[in-house]
Image (cartoon, rainbow, N blue to C red; front, side, top):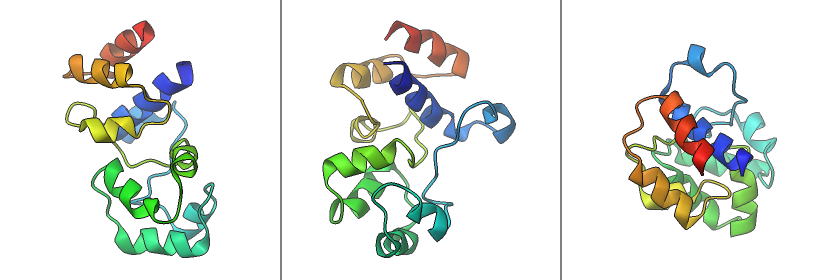
Length: 131
């Protein structure tokens, strides 16, 4: 459960300035990744990486998911999303985008939406410790 909360927190912080993010491991952002970085991700071959480069910018996780759905099954996409994810702002994220967070449950999705708005990581960390 802890890694799920960490991943959600990493996604929430996508809009926080870089200096404030230095302590967390980075998820690859497909909107800024090079082809070599994309190919280094699970299940991405050079052809699929090129497809992603041609289709970006992805406004939301569901846009990336739609681009990958023709080539990767749901399990492969979920594995990929543990290493690469479109930044997500939980205060405005749709239920569909929240459900793409690896390990997300309907209950967690409801709690993320219930406790909006998140004003700081401290507030999020306090709430995630309860989940």
